Image (cartoon, rainbow, N blue to C red; front, top):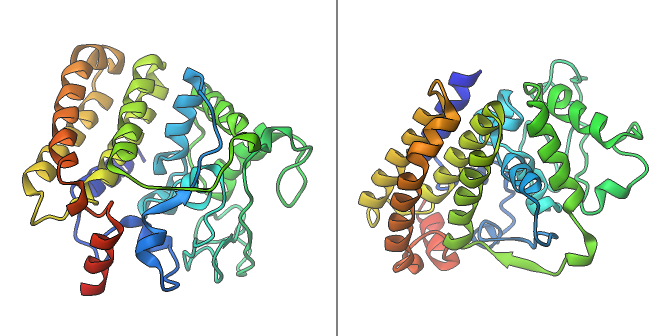
Length: 299
């Protein structure tokens, strides 16, 4: 499983050959506004996060948390629950036949829950989930038990380390309806900060959670790479791919914490330098809705 997940992250970072420009196209309904849907998201309903919630935020965005078939296509919790809200354009054929819904008893995702039927349910908004009395179709009174069942039964992912699971719960409980307002445009700055936040959280975590957070960071680097057109940003893509492999090397070192302490500062400096180069030409990337629309129309 670890090797498969590492391959997933590196393939994403390397921009492996695909009929899609962006991985999110795999689970995004083309309803006539695809470029806009892929460059905008609901606003994340959070304030300042605790270190634990910061780690949970990174794990929420990592396919490694779910594992199995979901991880192999790059699916994370955030794919269905954009910024903790509802992805109204979610449409992965293996999980739904209508946008904004998902089949929690899909045989594709789970041999445990699979019932051989396509019966998607509306994707729930996770804002204020910590204050709800019950969760899911079976009205589970325990949010912790419900989240465990989603990861380990609905998607058959490996059990998270105790700290990783606790961090994820802190993030879910930090989603606050009073901080919701509209939507946001996805930017290079935000995508780069997802990488930085994951690496920063890894530096504070125990070894198993640090490894999971470095995988989250690798995946986040991949989400930056795929937004860079190959013809215009070949040098920056190559450099970011190399940095993703460096994160993988840290993950598999005998002492991941020591590897981060030794190499983390230099890694971050190199990453920041590449992002600064791209930022000067952000209008030429697929963070730009018009650029993405033009590229999609050529496919």
